[in-house]
Image (cartoon, rainbow over all chains, first blue to last red; front, side):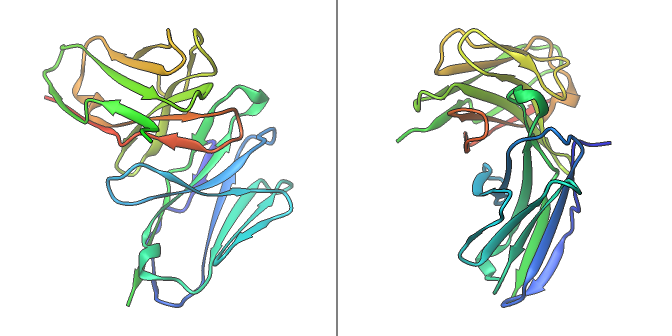
Length: 111
Length: 112
């Protein structure tokens, strides 16, 4: 089983739609969680960190469910510019320093 | 504001050749990482380092070696390149565990 799993999609949605991605992780000792965004053939960039209490940044909301070992990303009022691959990232257990990526979920926002 | 710089950006190797990819960061970060990205596979961790002089294996370390002799540099070596190592390689660094990781622009390597 992969340490971090995501539905690869693609998710095809119209502009203005709300879309949600989930990500599950296998190691209950993981301590830090992130969502990264990657545009085609570019390097990944941090979208937002994910905190236990949940956090929001404009149209983006991230949540963590430690009991069920999943994190989620909600995008409201989708824009064409949101089209990208969204990567779920989890730190490895035991404070080893590992940073583990999911395979990514592709979002395509259409006019 | 260089951030994380990878060299080279593109390379074509013949099977059996060796090469070294260089990653340099100017942010005084402790942690550095090497990933490979293949279609449908996401980013897979090859090796990482939690400080100068330290290295550790990631998910897919076979066929690669690394060194971190200076805090700002993290080198990835391929001793005998194989076609299966054709990939896009990304280097990243972060201040500490749990902080944002910054990525280089990637190295596109083709082994023929």
